[in-house]
Length: 480
Image 1 (cartoon, rainbow, N blue to C red):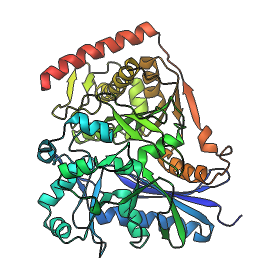
Image 2: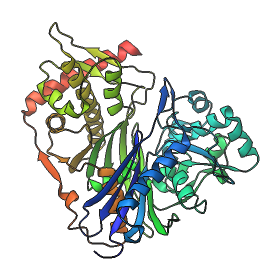
Image 3: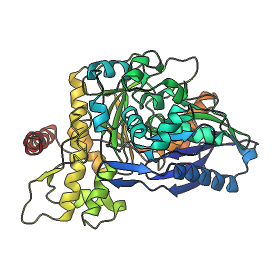
Image 4: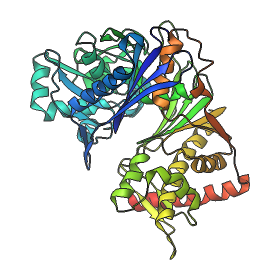
């Protein structure tokens, strides 16, 4: 075995932290570790103990190093949830408050008080003013956590995405940085100038000195136990890379805690009403790619919500449930409102089409269909704006073959169902390999997918979709 033969990849996600060692030559997963993280969630409050994000990361790294010596690890590559924000003391490293999850919605007043128009914010950041991006969360933290406010006044405050918190600690406090993709999710970063935007900072009463240095996704993020940390980026950017969303026209639907549609639109930014413009992962000396991004507020979290309501089912058998449901209900899965392109966070879930013989399987399958329909709505909308999908992959725990077949039917597209069990981990490891010029043609996981074509006629699909649109218009009126 050659010295330094593995890339150690980390994925710090909404419900767990994972790590894996991938062979540089064939991309095979040689070791894997996972640690759960607890999200405390009550209504709009969604937060973590910030230290848990760090200790879970350290734990999974050490588990990998117990199997593969550090001398055989060439580098560490990190991805994380993007809009979750952490507050810590730059002198001690101590977390000064809970980490506010990307799902936290308590900053509604702070976002409403901002005087900049949505148009200005969208043009500069690619995003919209909502409480779910980090800027308003930072203001909320300053207003509600005394230790954060004091540290801000005394010049001791560090505020950053999860990746910057992790790399700061793993590097021993030497590196305070994040990449363009994670910086963007703060709502304070200009995707045209690639700098913190002074006008937006001032509108929130913030200063850039509390924020990380912004750099490309591949670079110097410090060292941990003499292993270089060379990649730091967002989870969706990593998933896109693993699923081949590397060129213009390629796209991904990623089903996780939330669901995301991401379309690579090349090196030129775009301004499409109701749709986010995101940055893909980036390398020094190269123009970054832009992504049109449609986030749903919920996906896996909606399935968990159903379980909390008393629907007893095995989440690992969702695809079988989807296939066997006889009369799926109609469902608007607006848990926490609707994301892009609607951005209406006052909406609530709506169900209809219950029959005397409706079973729990029909409710579960109808809920999953609702997620599919919302993503199809967005893809059809983008097509009307002149953006076509040339190739589409799906990934994530919910993207079973039967759900993907239904999605393919409604879209009228052949979809590649990605079979990678850990696409985010694979993607961030792949970024490391690509940046160093390694030959990835032998990476087996990149060929691990199945092509799924529509199984019903276009006329049948159109009829199903027309029923959805009638229901959607009716449901919106009920909860507005």
